[in-house]
Image (tube, rainbow, N blue to C red; front, side, top):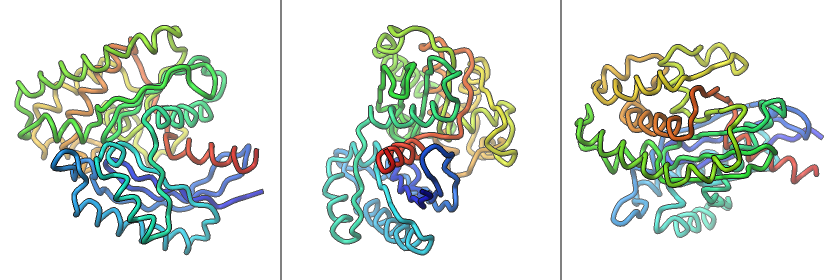
Amino acid sequence: MDMRLGVLDVGSNTVHLLVVDAHRGARPLPAFSHKAELRLAAHLEDGDRLSAEGERTLHDFVDEALQIAEDKGVEDLVAFATSAVRDASNGEEVLDRIRENSQVDIQVLAGDEEARLTFLAVRRWFGWSSGRLLVIDIGGGSLEIAAGIDEDPDAAISLPLGAVRLTRDWFTDDPVPADEARKLRRHVRAEIARHVGEVARYGAPDHAVATSKTFRQLARIAGAAPSSEGPFVRRVLSHHDVTEWADKLALMDPVERAELPGVSERRVPQLPAGAIVADAAMDLLGVTQLEVCPWALREGVILRRLDMITG
């Protein structure tokens, strides 16, 4: 049975309503997309509380998204929040107020569940012929790493190494001061290194995959096909290119970065930190090349929902 599903993704950088037409066993077909860069990770203050302004902008977007979902004939709406709300000391209070006023139940995803759902989406996209998968995702608030041979990964890790979070906490200027870039590089590598064994114990991957806007932008900068060529064009990103651009991006000023292919103006400030994380993850996990997957967390949520409804 065909269904029109809506997914409301409250991310650390972008809040996104995706409407799809789907049924079990078929590829979900996007019907409508509405998003805004609310940058909730940048609205954390006073001991990681989500600010009143952050709550207001989120509430306004949720109300707008609900109206759009109704207008578009959405039958089932799934709403979830990731690290910015998960890490906010008042995150649940904010969501309770939204539930009361808007009657939408936004569930907070645990970090490892975020990694598992992203892994599911990548597995379904590339299929069983990919063998053992390694999936790396850099969000606004967190880094997710997952690896496994099945649809549910053997290892699923979430670390507080998102591009928006790190930019906010570690950089005081742009272009990035050289000493701050070095300090962040050491911090990121130490954090990832603690968890490499959790992934490595299951063996080397047959296929290493990247999801997220950060990796898509890095791939585009390094020469991959633009998004206008569609989702089925193969896009790869080498570790050599990531290392080269991680050094360059921190030295560039915002205007220079904004002129690079595929870089959106609002993501200009966070790209240096994102590249430092990408470089560290590929190096420490022994990855020489990543293939960029167009599906990620939202699609994983859709696929899991379809499995539950029609299973």
